[in-house]
Image 1 (spheres, one colour):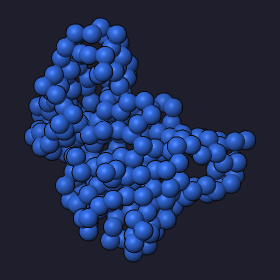
Image 2 (cartoon, chains in turn blue, yellow; image 1 turned 90 degrees about the vertical axis):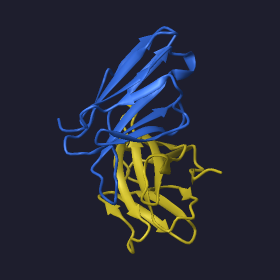
Image 3 (spheres, one colour; image 1 turned 60 degrees about the vertical axis):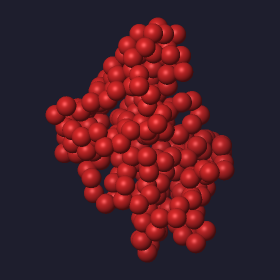
Image 4 (tube, chains in turn brown, yellow; image 1 turned 60 degrees about the horizontal axis):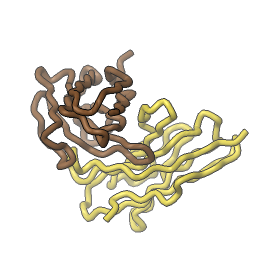
Length: 114
Length: 116
């Protein structure tokens, strides 16, 4: 399987706990994106990396959220002190960095904060 | 203001019929790209088709075609010969300019149900 993978697929946590999600992009893709999607909505941009550099962060990304891509390959998204409002699907996508810039998505991590 | 508008929250189509899903967009940038994604109940976003703002011809990919009307700022997705497996959410998305990240936005989606 050479697509984008995400782990875990589902996460249930209690309010106030920290959670970390992992994304493995398509191997030759140098751009990696994180999105959040709530029920009935389209994905909302959170942040993106070109290789290991985090180039842009949405204002949706509060101080409790942090993302890394230390070696320009996989990425992690950490949410500290989770709140019930963080419950959502977290999607990762990667792209080759061409002018078309098609993003290919992983299966997502569904987070439920109790 | 919404960058991407999809006015049909839900659509029904009979199996083997064609269906058009509407998408209008708003940008002042002359360079942009338009995308359609399918999201089945499993949650994964599947890329379907791409149209660049400078492309002269409408994009086609198998049973999918994009009816691109630049002056009207519309990029409707046409699915021919619908199949039961086409039942899913469909999202229109736009990349503005050559910058990415926040300039890649999705519409609210249309839920398509294909009836046997």
